[in-house]
Length: 183
Image (cartoon, rainbow, N blue to C red; front, top):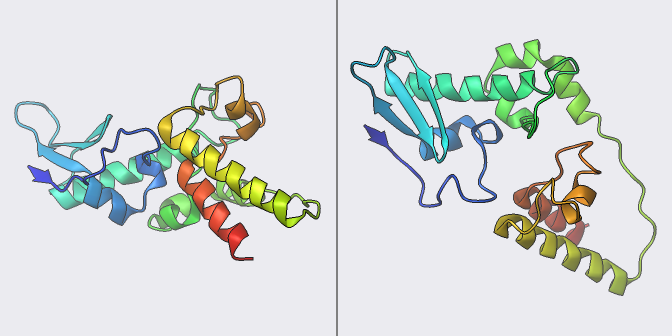
């Protein structure tokens, strides 16, 4: 058994899903279990997520399962994809770059995800700016603590524009705060 599970539980609120992780992150965080009398060679686990692989070795099984997770997330974000609850986010270009076949196959999904228009913000005073950053930090804490969810009928609906997009995750809110603070 290959067990390099991280110290942070992967099924904790706010933890990254496999399709949101770089291949190197996934390899470090996931567990691989050799299977016998099963019909499949490997089970790969990451928190509540698990998948199977028939790859030749543990390393190949990790790559195989990560590739499938990224593929599935891209597939489910195609314009003609089945409508499902809790649609996965579109993997970042950095995540997808490990798989040139997926970059080519889902070029339309990736370009659409990158085409997000900028929204001009009004000029704000220093006090208003500080309040906005504080609100973002509160949102980040709410996401990590599970107090804010996409379907909560409140802040989560604002965060996702009533479900028209997936909304930012806690680490993305943190990145936004850092970007804003260092303008």
